Image (cartoon, rainbow, N blue to C red; front, side, top):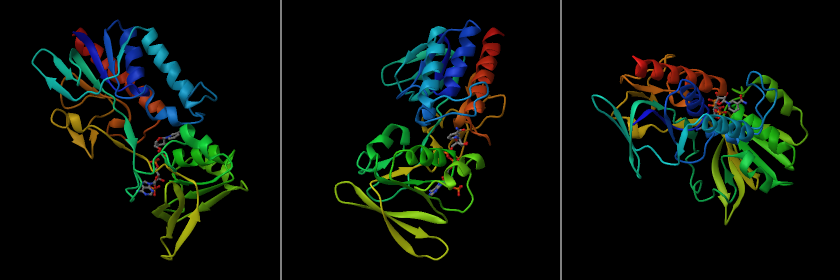
Amino acid sequence: MYDIVIIGAGPAGLSAAIYARRAGKTVLLLEESAYGGQIVNTPEIENYPGIKNISGFEFATNLYQQATGFGAEFKFEKALEIENLDDKKVVKTAKGEYEAKAVIIATGAKNRKLGLNKEDSLVGRGVSYCATCDGMFFKGKDVAVNGGGNTAIEDAGFLSNYCNKVYVIHRRDQFRADESDVEKIRNKDNVEFVLNSTVEELVADDSLSAIIVKDKNTGETREIPVSGLFVAIGQQPDNKNFENIVELENGYVKGLEDCKTNVDGIYVAGDCRTKTVRQLTTAASDGAVAALAACEKIDK
Ligand code: NAP
């Protein structure tokens, strides 16, 4: 039996693993895809205290190496269910069942989709959710970024360095992103803000050739020829597998700053938790809080 099974190896889960291992607990990290979570898609992190500038991929890799270096065990398996028994928890995957004294849910969140026709079939042929991963395919071309948060603005800045033109399509005229980042791209010659507007249609034969954008105020539509559309309209949680065991609110696991759920011995950390600020720093902070709470329970 493990002391703690951590579900999800993003910044919250990996931080929890570091704290739990340093407290001498045995730890299994379960991750369905790649370590690092959403942060691997961030070209540049400039707001993590103590680190002036680092790529998301390098940050995630450092975190992973730190956690496994401290002895956390890592398996690429998706947690399908948590069973709460009197004396232990059992986390079930397609490959096995793992017993633990405590479980930390740190499943993060996934990219939200626009829900447009052809959106899924055009992934890899013009539609992308990751500028860092796919941006280089559009070197010298015209692209659009949809969204008004930090991800969209950072993506637009990144793409403007080597794409011919970058349209930023946002449904309002105010940005959620940090003003300093918006200012960085506002006056770039090859960036055009298309505000109060939504993407209504994807024009494509084999691959994306244009988007139809609607101005919410005038109702007018405009066809913008682009080879790439980077969708950066936020995330949504993926906790459906745990809805029968822990309480959810709008898909997020209900938990306060102490990272406790409604089930004794099951904790929640990072973006998958009900909270107001979803940042790298708060994910790492949650990981520490959840791990120390789990350690305290185990040691009782
Ligand atoms: P976000 O902050 O939730 O922003 C999502 C954006 O997409 C908003 O501007 C929203 O518009 C728009 N949007 C949502 N649903 C839409 C829809 N159906 N159609 C059109 N537009 C839609 O998401 P994010 O930018 O991915 O950031 C997520 C979290 O990570 C945030 O807390 C962010 O600060 C953080 N983050 C931090 C960094 C960094 O610090 N370096 C980098 C990336 C992300 P409205 O504004 O109108 O709601």
